[in-house]
Image 1 (spheres, rainbow, N blue to C red):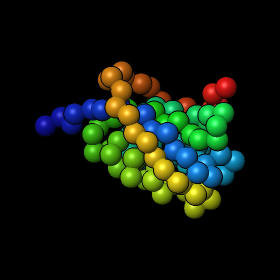
Image 2 (image 1 turned 90 degrees about the vertical axis):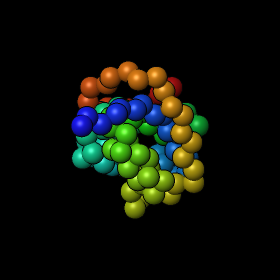
Image 3 (image 1 turned 45 degrees about the vertical axis):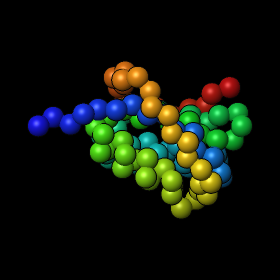
Length: 95
């Protein structure tokens, strides 16, 4: 049986910039076969777009609430997005 896919956007707040959060998110996403992006936002938060199997995306969402040891996550706001297949997982900044 094939898994259903989902696409979510997460806005992660706290001490999440300058602490390796995006790189760690990329590693965790790729380990779960989740595609998407992790981008620094001007307000100090990180936007994470996740596309993949329901369980894999849900698992990554749980990890985002904790993040890497170097980060302090205060909140994770989730928004469901229309399904749009994505390739790879990129990191960067939005201005």
